Length: 457
Image (cartoon, one colour):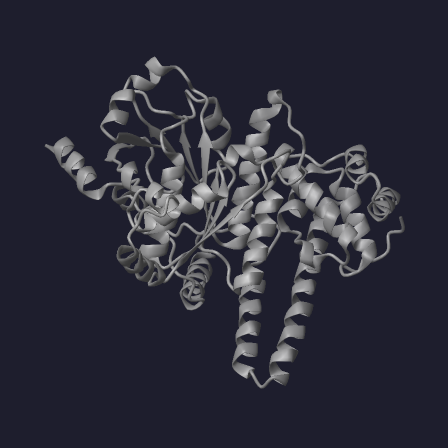
């Protein structure tokens, strides 16, 4: 390669960048985190970027050319592009220089996009929107940098960082997205203290039969009824009909059996119908064929895009029941010995998806502890220290909350929720709640409050 100046908007720059990213872990991490598919010139670049990003998130290292060649076997355009990357390989590549050029590249692509949009808005006599778009770009430009190793002086940047935070909060309020800040369980809501849950990944972990699906639907129902939020529910466990009937029963606090069998009087049904139609939010259920299916996080991402295309807006809350039935975006066939790596890869994908789509990602996961004596000891709770599933989930999740229930508690319709991990509030708390599954109610407020009062005495 000649040591000529590199235009950060040229194809040659991208060839050199990806050739280096496939050799250097640090640069690969920068590319995986910051290069979006819309910044790239064609579909071949985009497909290679997706594979590199997914591989890096899973293994924290770039994929080899052999791995990429196997992945794109039969895709001649992608194989040809990989061979071009090989031609641009250099010894002792200056990764800092390429990082600076990547920063210029991203800024340039964003600028081109903004000016194109601004021109359209001016032609439509929408000057206010055009000026707002330019102001938004200027704010982003002032704070965007890929120099993660730079030293930051706390005192000298004190006002600058404060103004940036204040501007970010103001923009968040002005974009009129509804607040997503509740678990719909008072004790957890008090711990959260109104913090924004958009961009966060929350996992509810439980052994079989405890009621993690009931909890997932509880969040969906309360988000719709109480806060007018739009919920997209992915049903991977059980049938679509079961999920729809359970939601229908939960929205009117009646056993799903009555809805399923049509055993509701016409007069009562009309009342329920008016009630359901009056809610400001919505719940949409998406299921997949079960036979020989390998559902990946890419299906979740594509489903959100399809939802947005159909409805004209994005969901506020995305629920996946259950995450253990997902594979990662590469659709790799994971062996039993790599189950933990698969969990981490899937959780990392969903965490990134929550941030990219600005949604609260709520997932359930089934633990495999089957020691009934251990589960019946009410001093025991599932955590990352005693549950193999939790070990892989703790790091990528914002919250990891386990559902714990002994045989005696099951008979009394009680359970214990344990905060095994939380990034923003204290962990380690265990609370006892009451349920009413006969009426499709996960959290029975009256009985749960009575339990809390008894414990406080």
